[in-house]
Image 1: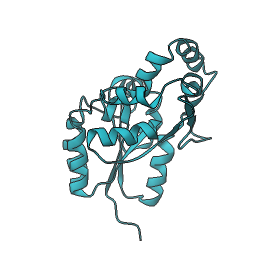
Image 2: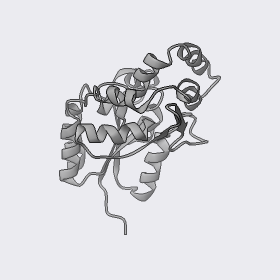
Image 3: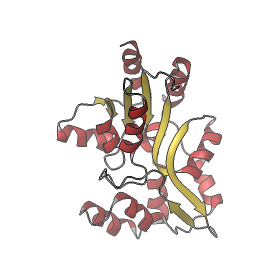
Image 4: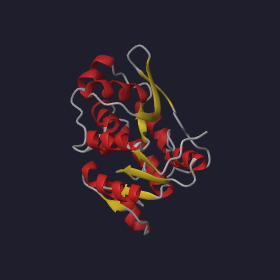
Length: 221
């Protein structure tokens, strides 16, 4: 039997659970020449978000050693560990939904001393070049990402229809469909701008510390 779930939390990683955006920063540093044209094509609707990733990052000449040095500089959001502890103590399922890459998330958990379940895209190294594969795409959502956050949230909703599902994010490209699918959306940065423009309800936050009191209230309800 499925365990009864009253509340479940889904959280973006890059720029939300972590301070820095891992993939975007690596792309800026190591794939600068390809990015402007590929981004312009994405903005015109000529390619999807995942196709943008493939054009910019697939085949990127970047060794494990270089990535390791960069990952050692990544910082967690000031409230990230407290949010994990809060969810664990109260039996609230917590899951990272990331349009980043599994190899990086695995290593970051080791470096940061945290553990979380996640969905992410797949990264392997082939002669010090990145080779990518989508992790949880959707052919129907329209987000065009490698990890469709709406699809993941809706899968949990089908198992736990009475639960309140929460999404926390910061980016309009990979987080929008998740925010729209959730019962409660926490947003900042470009995600907050996009949701406000659409007239959608959401709760603003600066750090993950801001989220915890509202989660406490939702759990009490």
